[in-house]
Length: 196
Ligand code: ZN
Image 1: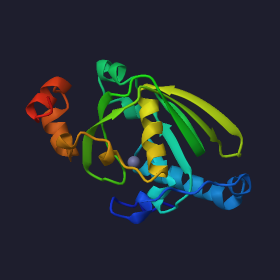
Image 2: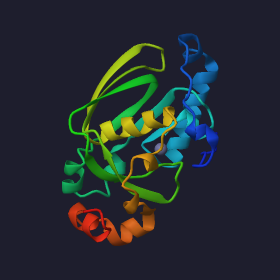
Image 3: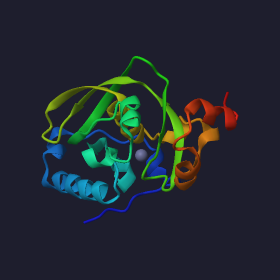
């Protein structure tokens, strides 16, 4: 079953989600929710989905960056984004610690801001402590695009959206980005949009 994707403006997207207990994590209801979130993420398609985006104010997000999602990137674009496939996994009650360079800038989108994109600075590396879908502790060290996905999803669990962090002058419809800016250097884009 596909779940409704809540759009910006819904209060649930602006609330800090509550933590889950191990008992809740191991319940059939939560397993079912994760299955439906996975189906919804595949259908969208997207690389991450946080529970508040489907109206559940709980500290749970799923991540999956399939190899085919990177296919429309050139080898150079994939390399500069440090983008590699990430297998499906679940993060619960995550605590994120930023590591390294805080201003890696790329365009990103969100299933709760359908049709838009913007340039968002993110940390190049992050460390995340969380629980997995069995309720077991997991420790994640991520860099590049995977680190970006983790920051984006964990922001959702704390009531954040990328529009809180973006360079607002770069906010635009996805089709405008594809038509006008996809192959323009960031330096030229920033100069033309008045960011430099
Ligand atoms: Zn999002």
